[in-house]
Length: 323
Image 1 (cartoon, rainbow, N blue to C red):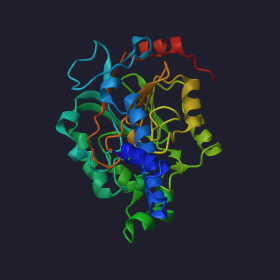
Image 2: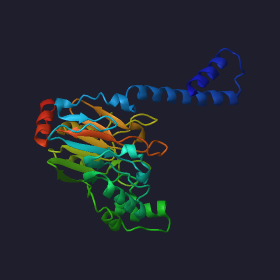
Image 3: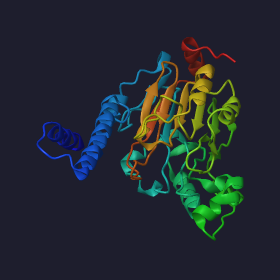
Image 4: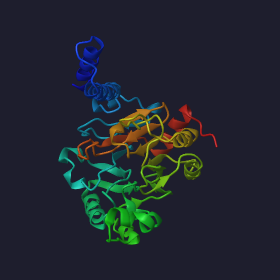
C-alpha cells in the first residue's frame, strides 16, 4: 500500500497534475520513504530472512546439523541431541502459543527474558522454565534484563526504569534455579561445549552495552576456541541481524566466530532478524520470540546436532580454527 501511494504522489507531482505545495511535498516525501522501507522489507522477506518455510531448506555443514521444521514432531536421529531456541520473550513467556513449545533435550535462551529485569518477571520466567519439557536449560541475559548487570543497575538503570523501586541484583540471579545462567562463562551439556555472553553494541544506554571496536573485541577474545555452541544476545554482522534501517550486527563478533569455526551461534536482540542463516560452516540462529510489536508469536528454532565428536569433526572439514 505504502509503495503504491508513494509512487502515485511522486508521479502526480512530476506530471504537473498537482501544485508543488509544501504540504504535498512533505506528504510525497513521507510516503516515498515509507515506500522504500516497504520495498526493502519485502526484499528481505522474500530472501528468507523472516520466512520460516524457506528456512526449512537450510543445508547444514557435513550432515552434522539438522534444522527441524515445524511442527517439530520428527524424532532426532539416533544418538543426536535436540535443541530448542528462544530469545526476547520479554516477560511474555506464558503467552507463547502452545504449539510453539516443542519438547527437546536442551533449551537455549539468548536473553531479554524480562521487560526490564523485574524480580517478579524473573521468578515467573523461572517457573516457565521449570515446566518446559527439556532436560537442560541454558541462557544468557540481554540488554532488557537490567538487574543482571549490577553496576549498570545501581548507577543508573534502577532510577531510569524503576523509579524509586530498587531490586537486588544478586537476588534476581538467584531466582533462576532450574537452569544454567552463563555470563562470559562456559558449560558442557551432553558433551557440547556451550559458551554464553550477554554483551552487544551500544543501544540507547541499556544493560550489557559496550562500544563497538576495542571493548567488544576484548569481550569476544574470551570465547574459548573449542566452543561448539555460542549463545550471545546480539547477532554478528551480516547474519540474522536485520532491522528496519539495515543490518546492525557486530563485525568483530563475526570475525571471532569465523576464526573459531563455531558450529552453532544462537542470538536474538533484533526481532526482525528472526530466522536462520549459514556461511557454510556455522548455523546462525536468531530465536527472537517477540515481533517488533512485542507479540510472542515468532516460532522457536529447533535443530538437532550429531554427537559432539562428530560435530567437531564435521565442522573442522569445512572451516579450520585459526588462533
